[in-house]
Image (cartoon, rainbow, N blue to C red; front, side, top):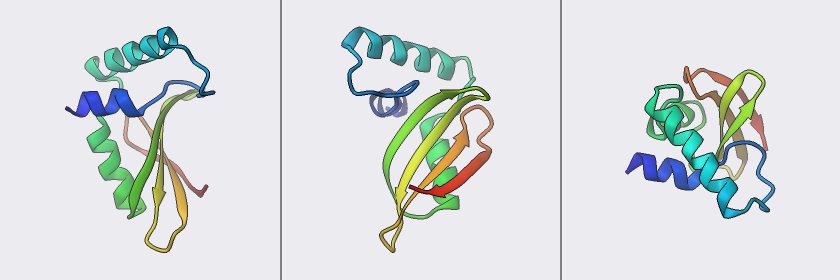
Amino acid sequence: MALILLLSTLSLGVSTGLADKKDRKKEHTVVREALQRGEVLPLVKILAIANQQVPGDVIEVELEEEKIGLIYEIKILTGNGRVREVKIDARTGNVIKIEDD
């Protein structure tokens, strides 16, 4: 179930909204294989880390490929109505940055 949620909510690379089905399927395959090889942590663990740092409701999750590797970007709506973005290293779970969105 977590894998299905992961694949249905994440994008690899910069999402333009214009990617065709073939590109998205390839992205999902890359993410699934990275998860199976243990190169990225499961979404459930990443969300727990993000909520420890910024309590609130998760409103968006992306998996981006950056120079340093795969990075989860989680947007969280806090109790006071602020949207914060938590960037987490997908392999280690280390929090890289927390910023206002």
